[in-house]
Image 1 (tube, rainbow, N blue to C red):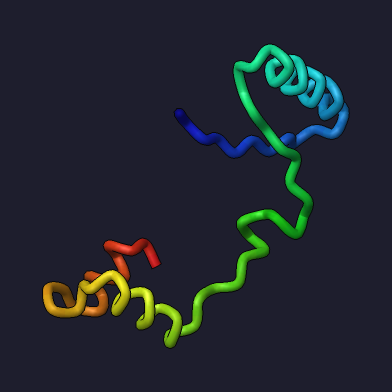
Image 2: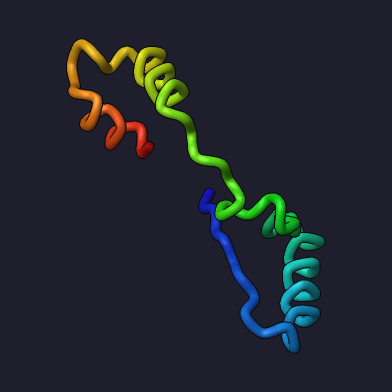
Length: 76
C-alpha cells in the first residue's frame, strides 16, 4: 500500500478532483480524507530537544550511535 499527499493548486478543478477521488473510494480502490489546514504537515510543531532525547533513549540507540546519527536514523 502506498500513501500520497496531493495538493490541489487550482481551485477551479478542486470539485472535479474531489469527485474523482470520491468515485475511486466508492469503488473501494482508495481511501482518502480531506485534511483541514490544521492537519497539514507544515502546521506540525517541531519536537523539543528534550523530546528528541527521549525518543533516542526509547529507541535504545545511544550505545551504538552519536546523537547526530540517531537523529538521522529517526528522521528528526
